[in-house]
Each structure stands twice: as C-alpha cells, then as structure tokens.
Image (cartoon, rainbow over all chains, first blue to last red; front, side, top):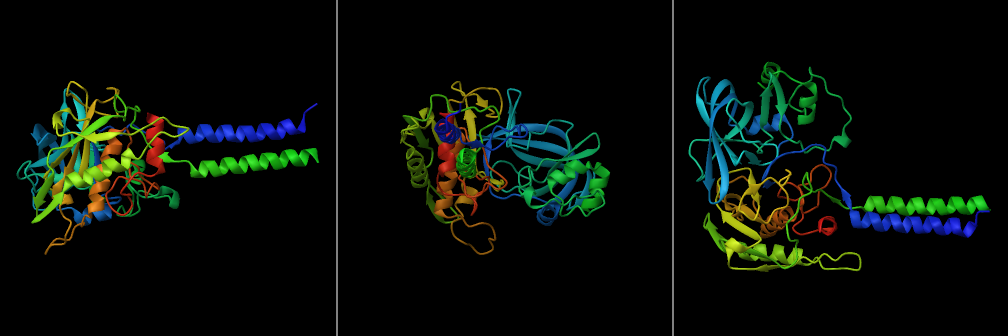
Length: 206
Length: 214
C-alpha cells in the first residue's frame, strides 16, 4: 500500500535535491569542438558576415604561406608569415607579390599558442584573407586579418573553410540558404556547410 | 482525491525544476577543464606599468586592475561553497600569480589577452591536455584602451574607465579557467567583446563557474 504522504514528501525532497545539485554545478555552455588556441583574447571587434568584412577590408587576397618567423614583443608572442599572393580580389597588391601576415601567438615547442580560430600559419598553408594594415611597434609592413579569425578563410583541398565563429544567434533564424544565394549575408556556418570551392568563393565575394 | 494530490505534487515539482533550469548560470570552461594550479585563495597579482600615457592621455591601470581584483575578491565562502577568492598585490612582478602586462601592441583586434604558463615558465594552451597552469600573464593593449577621449579623425570605439576595469576582470576570469561566451550570453563578464554586451564586473554566472571549478 502506497502512503500518499510519502509520495508527496518524495517529490518535494527530489526537487530540493535536484535544485541543490544543479545550483552547485551550474549550467556549462556546451563546447561543440576544441577551438584550439592558447591565448584567450578580449576582442575589439568581430564580424559575422562577408558584407561587413568586404566593407572594412583594405585588401582581400588568396595567399600561400612561404615561411614564418616568431617575434616576441614585450613578452607577447607574434608570428610574421611571408606569403605569396595567388589572387587579388581587392586592394593595391598584385598576383605574385609577397606580403607579410602578422598573427598574435607562435608555435612554441611544437605547440600552437594562438588565439582561438587563428592557428599559427605553417609553410604551405593557404587562405583567402580579408586584411587590414598593421600599425604598431611589433613589425613593419604587415597585414592582419580582420577580427582575428573572422576574416580568415582557409583553403584545404580546394575547399574554403571559414575560421570565424560567427556571433549571430542562429536560433532566431531557421532560413535555409542555398549555394546560389548571395554570399554577403551568409554567416560562417552557412559557408562551411555549403562547401564552396575556392573558385566559387572568390567568384562570389568579388 | 489521491490521484489529484499526486498530480498536483508532480506539477509543483516540475514547476520548481523548470524555474531552476531557467535561472541556471551560463559559463564555459576551457576544453579540457584546466584551472589555476593552487587555487584562488591567498594568491598575488602584479602590474608592470602603473599608468600609461598615450594620445596625450594618461590612464591609471593600477587603479583599474585593483578595482577588478576587488570585484573578484568579493567571492567569499558560503554555506554551500568553500571557495574564497583572495588576491593581494605584490610589487614582485616575476613572482605574482596574475601578471598584468600593460603595453602598446598596435592595432591588433584584441585589447586584452591571457597567456598561461607552467611553473617552469613554459607557455601552454589551456584547451590542451598540458594540465593546470601555475601563473598567467594578462596583457592589456593600450593602443585601444588609452582611447578614452574622442580625437579629431578618430572614428573607433571610445573606452570608458569601466571598460578597462571590465577587461582586467575578464582576463582574471580566463586565468581562473573560464572561457569566452558567445551567442545569447550577453551581459556577462566573459562575453567575448569589449562593449555594451559585457558587464564590468562578475555576475552570478562567473561566481557559479569559479565555485564549480575550485
């Protein structure tokens, strides 16, 4: 015979227990993938789509890394990579030019110590970069990627991989995008899911 | 009558549980859940430059960091948590647990950054399996943060002194093992970007996070 009072009491006790355990544990936001990176940065600006990147970029180029050099400035690591320009989409550079790309972080003892999403370049790496001119004491005549990783689109096996995390709230929009849609308003997740080839991507961002 | 009582009890339980879930805190740890080795009690902080002059403006960084530290020091033991954050200033930069590195690093897209070290001074990636870190170096980029007043031709973000306090507090959060937050998690200290969506000080979310980690 089930005692009615004991059922009610059990429910109350269960609730209190769950609440207590839950409160002490908190609710961790799920980590979906290891974002890498050894430097946790507070960003000055971020970009969620191609339209904003295009507007702000001084130079948009497809480049291939030739070499990289580690620089330490006031105890902060930087890497300057020399890269050959393979294609120019925007800006006063020419195909075949060598440009310098500055990143915060370095490869130290074989370990990538970088800002999440902006892994340090190694020889042979290719990207399409939305770049701006660096001004500061670390190095001269170099570009940086807009929004650290937001303006970086790696090229692997002729496919483009957006490195930006995107900051838009996906829950607000269930709209499905197609490859034939304008790329300007697509977010980085859409771009990765659609699997653009580098030729398709460069054609669309022109 | 019996069934009705049971149903009402269950409903009340579910209601309370739903309320709890809605109020649950949001924080994120690094990928392998590392933390500051030795905990957060009786630790030290230091700064390499008390005040920095740039753009004809002097910003007192010691004061901003002190305010951020005081904020974190407000986490004290309670009936359900023994965690006691206690950070005190030391003039010995090279021996401090939290080392604020104030400098002009140029127009990078970051205004603050945390680096993590083992006790043998090896830098580690907190997302990796390298283990817990012994100390952190927390850089603040004055190229951005000294822009506390508008200037002719400058169209970028103007920082408030509270923004700078918020950056210092945010970087301390990283040193304690909290990761950046994105998406809908605005109005929290660990929000990824300096500006109106980040709070200047710790919220219940960061407190819950640190109490869980330590």
